[in-house]
Length: 196
Length: 196
DNA sequence: ACCTTAATGCGACATAGTTGCGTCTGATCC
DNA sequence: GGATCAGACGCAACTATGTCGCATTAAGGT
Image 1 (tube, chains in turn cyan, red, yellow, purple):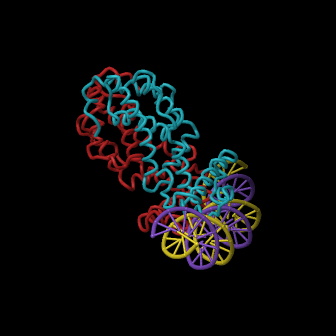
Image 2 (spheres, rainbow over the protein chains, first blue to last red; image 1 turned 120 degrees about the vertical axis):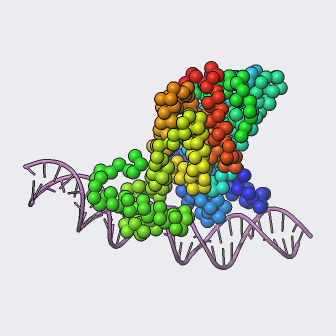
Image 3 (cartoon, protein in one colour; image 1 turned 45 degrees about the vertical axis):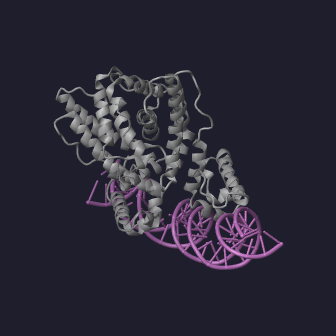
């Protein structure tokens, strides 16, 4: 549900949606976040404000849609030949992208205009899919792997927590530290109990 | 900074602040969240809207203030005689309060209307203080303890991540599972490296 | 090609947010 | 205790944003 469900997926509706999304991106790039208002976006997109209000309901929900679209990873995680290297690289990149000022803004937008939580859930699914890809590749190499849930709990969640609640504590080696701890703990019994 | 910095802490300013906060709480309790608008709050508080706009700037920042005030724990964590019991009980209570619909709403409010991140940071400080109290008490009993950062990373952060991004995955035993994993891992070498 | 239905545009209206200015109150200094 | 100063508040006019009914247009199915 990154775009709103479109009962009429083709033609004008699709053009309007793309035009509005483009207007949001352009306006933000040119005049910054403060200039983002529904009337301004509508004018830029060549659309009446009421169209936006009807389709998205709210500036926040529109921004949430655009944010989720931007947070979608374009490529599968890079293969570095080992689980440790793959996870570390991916986590570092994740932390860098999400922890940047614009990344934080997108995450906040995604959380913000999201009455039912589906957009935020989509972000989590994106991360879980990437992790899943890394893990299954490692499994193909006959490496010992943790569950997806363990990685979400002990790598993704701590990074996101600091991004949202403690932005001052984002060190460059934090991602590496978390990944190392999770993989080292693979030998201890408690981490093999699986999720939940 | 739970209330805005008040250049004039006494008398009328304090009365206005308390009156506005009370109006927010009452209106939300009586008519629900949708009824919360600045004019409505101002009318209920016996204040003109412009006062609220000048002091808080925005409905979101006002709600963020009220939310942080509500998220502050009233009492120190209960003493159950052991680190495991103390942490488990506290985490379960934390998850229950924060994961409830109203708790999620407060967290979202606190994150939302928070330009500089200080309100969200305050929430994290509240949790860290509670954990700190539990740990230092356990230290007094000569128990082996993890660092505050380890608990924040592997207990608090995963719970908060699910609350915000995956509200469907909140099981009753999730808090217990996380606490158990952290305390069991105390014997493994990787968890004694400390934070960062 | 026609028909049905949903999406859009338009404009009037309601609500929310902004600003300048005068008044009042709390704090500080004598 | 009284005078002075600065900041907070109320008021009111104004602007911007959000809502709604109705006519029009276009997409999908027959």
